[in-house]
Length: 199
Image 1 (cartoon, rainbow, N blue to C red):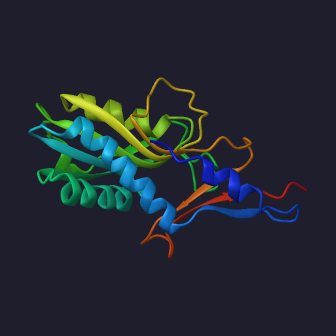
Image 2 (cartoon, rainbow, N blue to C red):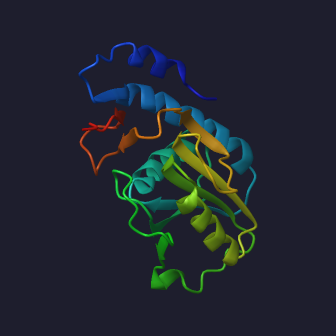
């Protein structure tokens, strides 16, 4: 279930001198998260061991919000959370690590995920490098099944990695930036479109 019509309505309010617009507000995103949890519950129900892997930074609070829904609404109580530090771009899409840097927590060095269903959570799917890096890492830990979930898919993935659960798909110009504002990193839970000023 994807909720894309709201974006079209919001874009109608943009004027020529605006460079940032809110596409989704908190109440709209709460509905999006409900739909994402419903989709995830479809393939998680009946699994014995489930691990939600949160790509830092904003993947962590998103995973926590989804985790609460899976526990409270779908009674999937036995779900563990794990943070994964992966960095490729800065928030404004400046390339920082061409190799897509994954910093392993020493506590996870001997992690064995045999028999475990893994759900990798991130805020935005851009080119796919961070998600692919996470999936490869989980596969090396012998995960039985690996699923992926993102709040926003920009539809410009270049690598062979799929998204199993997408909150919204936003097809915007390549130069534009989708900003997911997620507490506690930002004050308000929302999605903004930022259009850089070109001199």
